[in-house]
Length: 172
Image 1 (tube, rainbow, N blue to C red):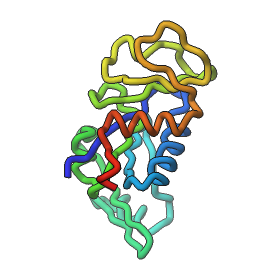
Image 2 (cartoon, rainbow, N blue to C red):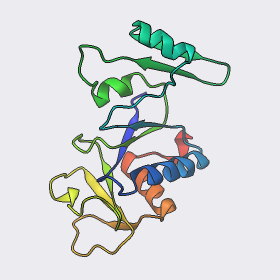
Image 3 (cartoon, rainbow, N blue to C red):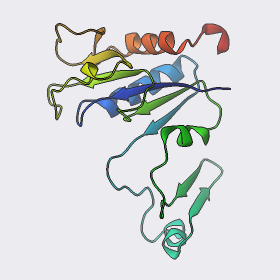
């Protein structure tokens, strides 16, 4: 199964995470199996100092899996290697109907650009990215070359994603 990929992009504080969470909720409510990728532009750690898995990593383990009867996670340390591509990450995913990608502004998959009045930048990403198929904004945007949706119109944005990724009723 080739996964369908659709992105949520925008500048810092433009509402990407909030929109992604609401779309995951709506699309899973509609019966789709959804996975997500979140790109970070900063160092992060999902592990906590003092845990056994943290100690494994600090001792030098290149990958550490932590597993329970409710979930599992695989942590991979990037030592002497570059950040993996989006394609590399997606290849590790279990089969699903749709992968929502938060961030990855420069990738070529279809995307919604988020804009908020409080966002870090007013620069329009649509001017240089033909893969942006719509904008979700909390303020009116005149003279835009793609459709503009209210940032909170989750049902309409989920409909758009279903159309753009060609998800159909028969696949559920």
